[in-house]
Amino acid sequence: MSIEFSKQLSARETPIPGVVLYELPVYGDNRGWFKENWQREKMVALGLPDFKPVQNNISFNEKAGTTRGIHAEPWDKFISVATGKIFGAWVDLRQGPSFGAVFTAELDPSQAIFIPRGVGNAFQTLEDNTAYTYLVNDHWSADAQGQYTFLNLADETAAIDWPIPLEEAELSDKDKAHPRLADVRPMGPRKTLVVGANGQLGKALRKLYEGDASVEFAGRAEFDLGSPEAIAEKNWKNYSTIINAAAYTAVDTAETPEGRQAAWQTNVTAVARLARTAIEHDLTLVHVSSDYVFDGTAKTHTEDEAPTPLSVYGQTKAAGDAVVSVVPRHYIVRTSWVIGEGNNFVRTMANLAARGVRPAVVNDQIGRLTFTSDIADGIRHLLETGAPYGTYNLTNDGEPKSWAEIAADVFELSGASRSDVSGISTYEYFKGKDAATRPLHSILSLHKIQAAGFHPPVGESRLADYLG
Image: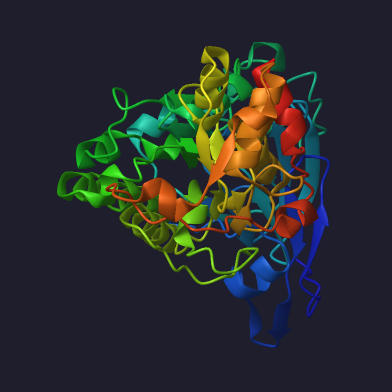
């Protein structure tokens, strides 16, 4: 066998999305050869997913013509040849538009290939004493066998041109019995789990992902964030993403002894459990943050501003953000003045307008509304585009306004008079009341999420739509 020595490490895309062929440097002399079969730092820099392998397997094949596959397994694989030579064949058996796509290549020890979960893998040895080796990022288990997808090596649709005809090759009886492509059960994607799915944001996410079987929704009854058992009982191998739409948001009640405990339990302790789960199972964690992590001193808040919370609620949200930030694959979506399905400021003002009430509304807190449908759209955009992980501000766009100005807008849109709304300072409004301290400036910079390709709609148009 002739091996090309001292090639540059390089990557080549294939017709199957996510399948990448690598040229590996092999160094040889009169004694033999050496190669770095897996070098995480170099290969990740080249674009290989940091797929965190946990098991290394070797298949030794005594005779040329030994043929194995086509097996699609519920984990990722990094395949190479230790000695000898193979003809490799890969067929996309994942649910989606590339189902049935085929790629073939001959591999010697100077090549390797990355095969994502759900892509059918097969090889035929071209030399005696060939050793085929692969790294996988999950441990084999009997439960996992039920998730395998198979394709017959002789499938006419894939039409793989085997160098050694299958009737002359060594095949197992099981491989001979696998179904044709028309009868294959495609492997579905890993799921996204939305927790807190019955709240304002959860309902918007339900509407956005309606009909998408890969997104699973769980309210407290289905998944209690306060229960360690709920985490332990979940088979996280079937998931890729957690969207945490759950939060304790009773800002004033959080200042009481009972509320403080509940706020820390939901916004920090439960979030820490999700973060640990995401790290252990290499999941993406999406977490929703708040303008209350800031004291409102800055006129506009950027993503890299240090937290300076004024209230217990703000402290718990800042602590939750810090916990989530250690997850390698995380999105912290920071928002403000959230409006969705259910009771909220806009609905309250619309009801007051309908009843002829003339309210006094705070006029020195400045910010932007954020409609839950746009938060949901922004989250989907970050996930689908693979935006860089980190923190993103996400509110509606437009000129910042005070609560009093927004109330006046609601009154006008509801057919009442703007002048029915009068302004009052935060100090005067809360004077003598047990209330949390609010930031006066809640304006969040949108530059980062706009640079990532998501442009939140202007809040005024969303408000008009919301009120019908």
